[in-house]
Length: 329
Image 1 (tube, one colour):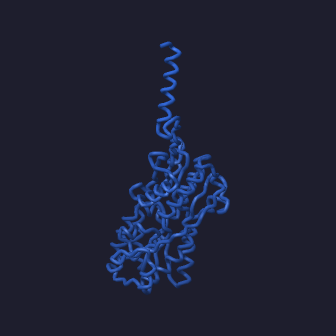
Image 2: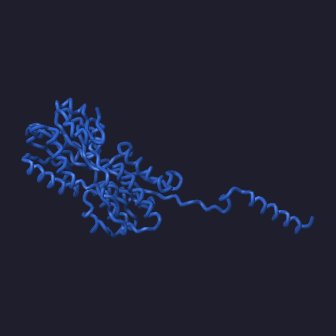
């Protein structure tokens, strides 16, 4: 055969092979693998329920971890001063987007991440970061945890569960800018109910022992533990101290009750993380974060641990049990 005949035969064979190839296997371009930075207050192990909710939310929009997105997880482990360095590390790692938990983490991401989009999973005080909920502008959007608005409700719940409560101690890290308004709302609610309230400003893990000792010395009847990266990172320790000192305590998230705490009331954080995936999807498809309104939570959880209540000699009112999303027996 001549060289021209060989070329014709090879061409025909090649066309036949192409026609028989599986659909999509020819000239398929590799899909983009998005790098998502997760800027957190606690370790991935302590944050597993929320992280799993986010991954499941991403799956709802067609994103599969390890296939078309990867997570770069960074935790401050209860030390908010670490956030700027963690954001810088993410920027150097060329993340496409940052998902941040809480006001301090979101502030650090906004300041340090440049033009990288930031989706907040739970901002305590969003107006400390953006000028408007409807049009946040800039590179930040996400979901509010409305923690300030729920502060009064926690005081009311303590009054329901602890008969004759007269003095409440509040543990708050006042270094967190979101907690100042929470303290003011808690103080106002307590005063309206005729309850004395005492603030203990906790800034490091060593402060919790001293705060509990002072609360017992001042004969506190109950305790409010504010949600913050420091309290999250030390949650089991705080619950243990409450048990040791026989102090009824209310928390802002359900993991404290799972660890043996008495009662919690707050937003459903897993639900916020699942919903955050929709923000990530919009941004990865081209929407500017500043054009996406910051939304309020839609799901709230009341959790009660009857085992902890019995250990404290407390009887949970039936009406309160009926309102609970989950009761630990």
